[in-house]
Length: 295
Image (cartoon, rainbow, N blue to C red; front, side, top):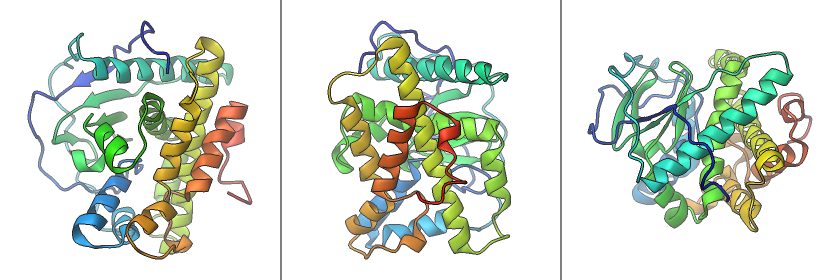
C-alpha cells in the first residue's frame, strides 16, 4: 500500500505509556462489535477448548447493561514521529477522513471525524473497559476507534492475514462502524436487542458487520481513485483478511461444525463479497445489506 508521504491525521490519541486503565467489564451492550471481538472467540476457543461461536454468542447477546465510564481526561498525546506503525495508522485514518468528508459533503451532510486511540493492555472507554484481547473496536458513546497495535501481530501470525493493506482494512472497517453510527444505523440495530429472538438478532448483527465491510471497500475505492494507494497484491490482502475472520472459518478453526444460525459477523464468502462490492462500486447506497435479499 502506498502511504508514505501522505497526510497523517491529527485526530490520534496515544495512551500506550499510560499503562492499563479503567475498571469495569469488557461488555459490548450499546456498542458496535468490531473485528477484534472475533479474536476473543478464536483465541478463547484454542485456549479453553470452547467453540468460538459459543463465545461470540455470549458477547453479542444480552447480559448486564454496559458500564458507562467517563471519557479519558486530559489532553490527547500524539504518537512520536519516529513510530512507523503509529504513522501508518494515522495516515490510514487521515485517508478515511478525506474520503468520508467528500462522500458526506456530496450527500449534503457533514462528516464528524472519529478519534483513533492507541493503547496497550486496557484502557477506559465510554462503553466500558477496553481490552487488548478485543482487538480493534469502535465505541459509539465516545465516537472513538480503539486499537492495541499488537493486534496486527495476531492478524499476521495467528489469523494468517499479513500485509499493510490488510491492516488498513481493519481500521477502515471500524471507521465503517462510525459511519453507521452517524447515519443512525447501528443505533437502530442495538434497539432490537431483546425485542427479537437471538437468532434474529444474530442475523441483524451479520448485516451490520457486512455493511461495515462494504464501507471499508467504499473507502478503498475512493482512496484509489484520488490517490492511487493500491499496489499489486493489496486487494488480495484485504480479501484474505476478510476470509480469515468469517464465522464459518472461525467455527472450523475451533473444531466445531458450521452453524449459520449462530453467525454474528458473516461467512468468509459474505465478508469478501461485501468488501469487494464497496471496492468496485464506491457507493454507500450499494452497501444496503439490510434490504438485500441475499447476502
